[in-house]
View 1 (cartoon, rainbow, N blue to C red):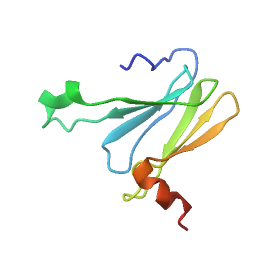
View 2 (view 1 turned 60 degrees about the horizontal axis):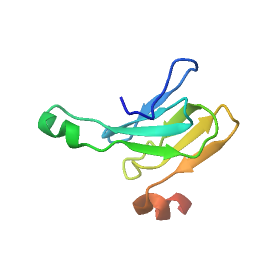
View 3 (view 1 turned 180 degrees about the vertical axis):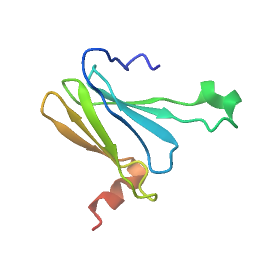
View 4 (view 1 turned 180 degrees about the horizontal axis):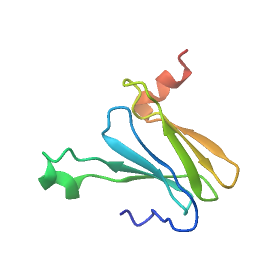
Length: 100
């Protein structure tokens, strides 16, 4: 478990990205934590996989949702008990966020 990921006092959601390569989870520290998922074939490389922490909320992140479109695996939304909601996208996907 990532050092930033904290849970215990609140209900926190998680979701897989559209291609099942990452698990996205809310955290009580106000961060969204993105974990790479191993398919078992790359077990030797699991320790080298990088966990990403997205921190912008001021309260526990209770809800996360990922984009179901296969061509937008890094588009996600998070909501916090502080009343805020954030839309997240990688730099590679940001141009697609404005497409209809």
